[in-house]
Length: 516
Image: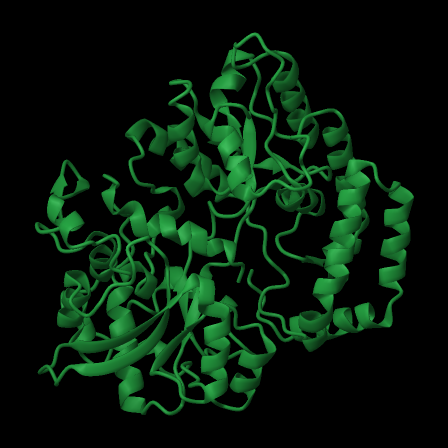
């Protein structure tokens, strides 16, 4: 998984103040997770003690302790006693590696990226439970709308984890433009890369902010956050591309990536990007939009409203519009879409089968609509009230720190619209986001490098990728000719280590379930 997904989930954790009702995603009666058979009623046993290591999505208020009211309510409804070790984002990679190497695992451990040598070795050694025989017995976990999530998370055709749902659409870096500037200049929403160029050129030359100065930055981009252009030209998500022969190949050496580089170089030379394109960080790109200086940026949909809200302090009409899609140079609609899970929970074989069923019951309740509502909103009539078909947070929600409870880290919100529900978003803007999401949802691009494993890819591909990225930046800045890029690509393609990566990745890809 890409670490960028975590920043999107922070939006979910803070979205408790949003006055929008969640989309219904499943049933489940209160307390349905308190049994070990997927929700059928029986006399409650003693609370099941479940230890777990969980990635703590930082909220700025520290991690919740055992006295957190919402976590207490979760335990009450599921008849559990949770022993949670929260691992901060800043130390996660190191700590999870040490934990996995120790051999002393909790009952359930959250692993952000299972496509690593360490995790795959543990799976092959039989360290984790194969949950395949159990999932069908849990009505919420086995819902039809989660089928793709389960299929794409399989390893060697088996279910070794409980994937943490993540909406397929709305995430990822894709262009957003000032809709009010488009309207002011009489411009249509761009569909092709040529349309996009012409819009940015108009932003540069026609003074859309009306200050009478030639100081507009058409599009806030940097070397690290312009990759969507390469993805568009290749019609891909991720680093690997599916070829007509059914095999996958690295995007970095594809001819379409060279075409994308030529387009980016021209746009930079024509002043459509910031002059310090090579060094700007994502937060700095956002600041250019928030200050009203830039007409667009590449970011995920959850950031559209915060950018709009900040820009309206300078211009009350400011409105960021995430593009619904773009048409690739090959003539096909393209938008960013992602894998329908982010991270996953593994259960070690040291856990008894009886406790495995109790853990699954706990997660089954979390994947019910009631469990979703509890994690996201808290307790009805305590932390929120329903008014006119909407959920409205109460002051008690702030007192009990519902947003900081970490509940959505344990139980993902099973909502296809979760990426557009952001704190404070007004109804009219939410409707705009719904219309964009509806269009994006019509175009699915699969990540063909997901759930593939190659030791050579893990150890050697980052070096090849960095060489390409460094050369690409030099070409854009005019420090190297495009011929130097061509020579580097040819050299890398001829490298035996690079070919070994391709061979190993294709061997793994051939064993992977087809996400379609």
